[in-house]
Length: 211
Image (cartoon, rainbow, N blue to C red):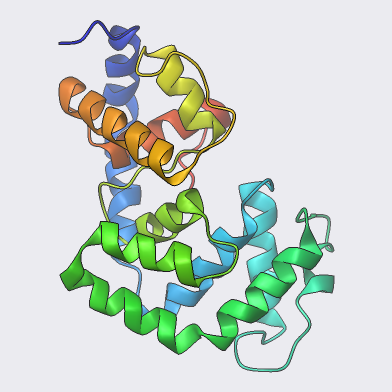
């Protein structure tokens, strides 16, 4: 095995939290077709905003009937004791995604045959506001596997365990895919899937097993 760092601690944490993590992944796999757009809305709002704020904003959008009526999303991204950063830009992204909702749903359904990599690439190219991290997050949250969600928490943990030397300043397509390959190799070496490691690393930061 490559000389990774602090593996004993990692395995101890996984032993303690592994079943809860696997249960969360089973919940993702159980997401129904009609829930896909809700997960997409959530992932469009999490960039540089907290998971809690994004979740509360989705609830506000659903209460207002955003999915089925002509509703301005912007005021709903900054109220009720939470705040979604860049709410105007994200409001535009939500409206753009809503306009292509049927097309996105069809592409995801067809992607079950073409594979996760091709489907993620399509989402990045066709859904405004979805980068590589957000597209990976969306697919993971609807039950897809083996895609790295390379946010700052994950990258810092990859540095901690010797997978990376430092956190990159930017993530181009090629750099994202290169780090994902290293993450996948690390997961294979320690015997824990990337999906499980993602949730384990997040639990270190939050104390919870979040989506």
